[in-house]
Length: 212
Image 1 (cartoon, rainbow, N blue to C red):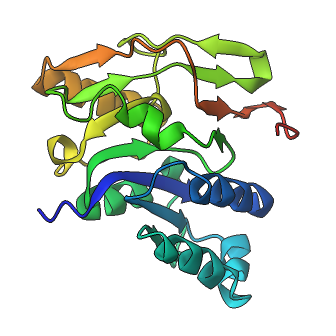
Image 2: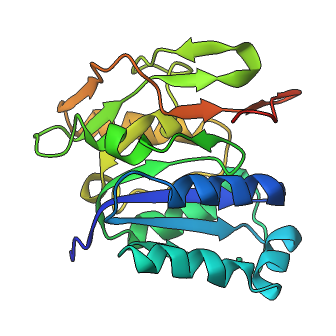
């Protein structure tokens, strides 16, 4: 594997074009370079408008200027299943040593990449889980490696460990991924850090739209 990047990010996009733009700006504002991000449309007509307008080229050029890489295109068909086709596509092609995940409606603080790397890079850990802030309930989520207590947006994992993993198309696919990692290594931990850099902005029936 050509480990060209320190970290790879996977972001499935469907609808919410304004929030896709927001997370793109979050990505481009990170306080480190040496990353790649797969920000891909899941057969989405709104995403297609970003392509036809040339807006996507603008984002790609900004990433390239700092030695980073944005992969951006729209799949021909939406297969539903919580963006699983995008997760499978990116997992198989990521060139970062570590892999992280995000929803296109959520928010990444500017130190998100460096924060997630801080307790796994240059260690023998295979997966680390971090706190997140859940906007709709105005609470900090303290992850536990148990079903319903951690999601894929709260983990960073060695890419090679899940390279051949196939993401499912059912609700709870993020826990299935985490369980797969737990079944294959004991080199995991909950991060020591007390801060969060990931903000969840949407739950079914609840959302927050005005976070700086």
